[in-house]
Length: 414
Image 1 (cartoon, rainbow, N blue to C red):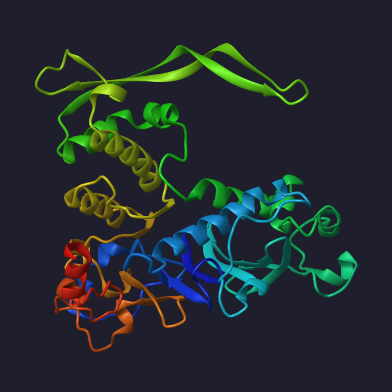
Image 2: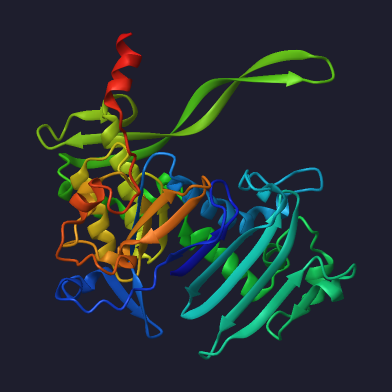
């Protein structure tokens, strides 16, 4: 599970922002009634869900984008060669394009707390470090600073955890994260962390094959869809061969060719309560909302049952407010699953359902940079107050301010 994330100099994020999923020390009666929204591990109370609000162009999606990029770097950085730049943009003002971008994450895997961080520029890794707390005290696994010298021995420092660590360093270019290469070279702790970021910290819906998830969770899925007010009573999935055309271009002859192809596809059939023997083709006869709900619930069931982490931008897209509340309640009812999401849905700003420390706001400051802060930071805002009303009134800043309506009318009617 995730305890803390810090990001700097990615997209609209200039100076370091912090997303803290460690529960604040809130002693109010309201927070005590929401004990299901937190879980305890290693004497630390951790939030199960965190919502990020903000106006359009406030940078809340850039926070999600930055986390996705940095996590993906851990299991993809070995794919970058010398001629490729990393696919991200640093903050464009105040000469920040020439400064490093940095990522820090504190997390727990298999009961042990880790601190992992790296800093990069567009074409190279600058620093990287990994620490852990095997017996409650911090210990170094490795540190790396490409600026310290020319040799690997000057750049790297190791604890006693990784076997033959310098062998890995010698095979790690300045394009590749050490943790990625160490995993490729079969180092145990690196493989564990690689799997954590690849399999446990889920960056979007449908991270695993639909057929695999469906075969594992069909009955739970049908129950979940029923609770979500769907009238689907059965779903069947089978593989079919489908003919198609493949267009290819030969660079040596400048000729285009078209070939017949046969590919495996999934045929999904649904059956409804009113006429359970009549089959519906999922792709052509179900609504977009039903398709989205199917994909969402299939992913969420896997995440919640296996205590994973889900990162979602605009959780309410194509979903009714009641369905979004249902999803959040699934996480809050879980053992240790976590959900980090952005939203515009102010109906979720309900302090009867979310604690103050579960609500964050993204806002553009005067330098056009994204700030991130929590409702918990507002000491004078009590959890007996109406958070939705206060947000819409602009008390927390993270909303668009549209004024001068008369000038807007002149644009339309002149």
